[in-house]
Amino acid sequence: MDWTWKFATTTLAALLGLSVYWHARAWWQQRRLPTHWALSKRPVFARDERRVHRHLREALADCVVLSKLPLIRLCQSDDIQERAYWYRLLGTIHAQHVVCSASGRVLLVLEHDNRQSERAKLIKLRVLRACSIPYLHCSLRELPSADELRKLMQAERSASTPQSIGSEALLPSSPQRGPATPPPAAPTKDSAAPRTARNLARAGASAQMARNRLRSALRSHS
Image 1 (cartoon, rainbow, N blue to C red):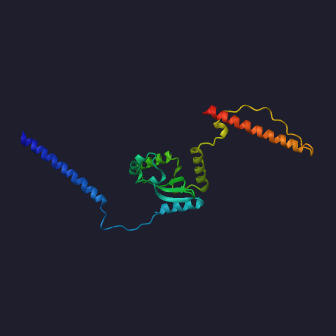
Image 2 (image 1 turned 135 degrees about the horizontal axis):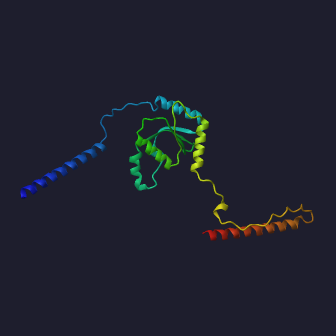
Image 3 (image 1 turned 90 degrees about the vertical axis):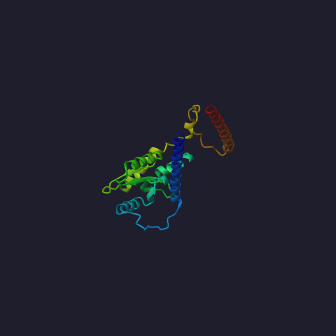
C-alpha cells in the first residue's frame, strides 16, 4: 500500500513538473526575440485592391480612404476590463477599405473579398452594426458610383442618428396664448418717445413672464 502511494505521488509530481516546464518554455519563446529576421517587403495592395482604392479616392475626393485597417481600430470596448478579450477576438480581422472624413470619423466600410471565413464575416458585420458604421460588399465588376456611395453614407447616417428635438419638446407644454394682436400703427414724432418706453416696459414684462413659465415647467418636469 505504501509503495502504491509513493508511486502515485512521484508520478503526479513528475507530471506537474513537466507541465510547469512546458508552460515556462512556451512563455520564454514568446518573449524571446528571433536572432534571424527572415522577412522581406511586399506591396501593400494587390491588383484588385489597388483598383478599388483608386476608384474610392477618385469618387470621394474630399474623404480619406484607408485600406486593410484592423477592425479593432474602428471600435473600442465600453468596459475597460473587457479590452483584452476584444483585442484577442478582433485582432486578426481587418476591413479592406475604410472611408473616413478629414477629421478621422468613419463613414463607410467597403469590401470585395470573398475569401474570408464565415466566422470572420459574422464578427465583422456584428461589430460594424454595433458601432453604426455603414457596410457595403460589392463586386469588382460593379463598383458603386460616387452618388451611390454618398447616398449610402447619408442614408445610414440619418438612420443611425436620432432626429434633433427642439427645446419645446423636452419641456411641458406652455399655456396657450391668445390671438395675436394686430401690429401697431407707425408712431408719430410726438408719441414716439412715450411709445418706445411703453414697448420696452412691455418687452421686459414679457421676458420676465417667459422666464417664470420656464422655471415652473422645469420644476414640474423634474
